[in-house]
Amino acid sequence: MKPRGPLMIEHRLIEKMIGIIKQKTVDIRESGNIDPGFIDTAVDFIKIYADKTHHGKEEDILFRDCLKKDMSDSDTKIMNELIEEHAYGRKIVAELVEAKEKYVTGDNVIDTIIDKLTALAEFYPGHIEKEDTIFFPNSEKYFTEAELNNILVEFRKFDETMIHEKYKSAVAQYTD
Image 1 (tube, one colour):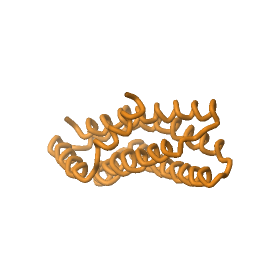
Image 2 (cartoon, helix red, strand yellow; image 1 turned 60 degrees about the vertical axis):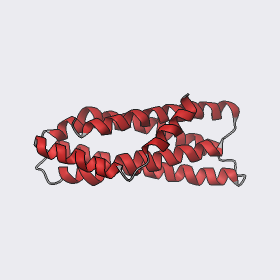
Image 3 (cartoon, rainbow, N blue to C red; image 1 turned 180 degrees about the horizontal axis):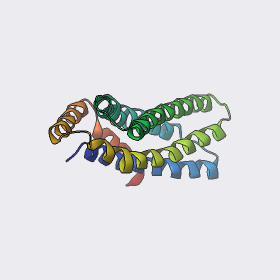
Image 4 (cartoon, rainbow, N blue to C red; image 1 turned 90 degrees about the horizontal axis):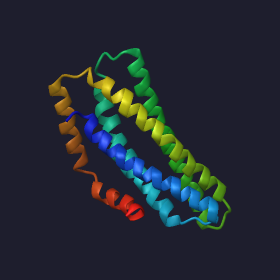
């Protein structure tokens, strides 16, 4: 397996949560009601699983090692775009948390919450596709097989500190 393997597996779980977010957004639009518990679950999933666990491997390991390589201008540009997109996702999540806090104290911020959930649901598919189909395959050409294996080992060590099962369960509670 190459480093893109575990990252793409994580993408599939992120896509499932994004599908749930999309459906919950439709439900909120139709009912006018927000389940703050779901918002907490979605935020936790995005912050810890998608950002800290998944983006952590990308930024702290793969991108770090890519910076040591003489990458083409186009591959460097894509990597920088991905880093900017990660920051954008963090910004949207922070705004969603702020809106949810206002909601639970009685403010009418349903439209803001819908906007933030929609922004996440629209952002992730394109971001994931760019990584899966462009950056991951392109980045591998800069590494030897031994270097790719070392990245995988580092991914595994990184994952030892993460809680994958918690987030698989978080997704399952809305899909099973």
